[in-house]
Image (cartoon, rainbow, N blue to C red; front, side, top):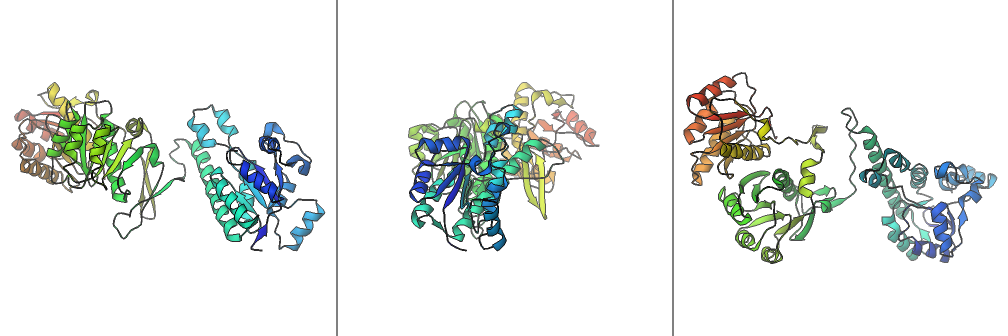
Length: 515
């Protein structure tokens, strides 16, 4: 049976916003309404006739409301097949009412967890009757229309108005798809709550917010972002984001989360790596010095600040072609300047988005082979307390500040990587090389090509040096302080070289590979 004219509906919802016009339309169409508890009272208060479910089941709501609709007369009315002679006969035999529409939503489990509520309150928000009704109605979409979220109230009203109470099988199947989306997401959230940090848990991911992207990694590939983008950013201006834009934006936010509440810091990103970073007394000077790190790569890059972007900074940025500019806020006049390029994407960080990014103990998931690789996010940031001086010469306080600055950049740069920094400015980095020596040589060549004086610079490495060749090459370039994890069986070779050549070297004990 394709088209069905509804004669009855079961309504039992937590969210009642937007429900009034629906029940009024049903009453106008002569659709009998069955309901329970607060929803029944809501409908009664509108002056619309409603039949209590307990009149059908002959059972009241029991166990503090835990059991209201779990009864054969309810589920029989939903699950019966209109074209099945035995089902039709049993409806008559057991006095089971036909139910054509089911409007049920679920208790707000995720919001209750997020609120920090005690466990018992969370447990009580695990819906039993609602999830069962949704699954039953969606399964029987050929005969029953299932509405499982208040987000579909408007859509249902349109269907009722346009069809005068009649629905098509395609419409019912579309609602059913939404219902199973809702139910599977709900069950995943409950499972993940119970599983907690168990390392042996199944991987269950569910994101219901989807944002279509301009394209994927290349224009011939489609792309989407699944997640709550608006909890991180307010998009103020510009064209639609692409897949590559978001990869770069993520890399930029991850790095800048290391500089929350620090002095003004600016970073320029290209292909997931920082090509310019500087920390200064003003954000204008930080931008100017970050751009100096590699003005060539900055073309078409992603720019990010840890403080508000002012007019002076915006004026300089406006001279550069860049894809995205990110900041906690923008001076209104600065924003108008940057809007001068119609396609330039302007993203304002929402609230404490940088702090949340740094402190959220999220899992990182990557598709690999015929499955997924999963790991904890790298939330370890090297601090002064982590440093162990490995050489006879200890670094000065100024060198320690530069070493820790370089270490933060190194952590967020593709391996193998070497970072060269001086006076809290990125001089250059060697990124994604198969050899650490190649990474160092790349960094030195790049720094020199942009006229950086590396005398007194520091070097950071994401992993240990298996041989002393890197410290020797760095020494010859002018580097006089090194930060690295340590842990090589040949650490002493690098230490000995540093001791003979007045280089300070500290070990952190933490490797920061980023593949």
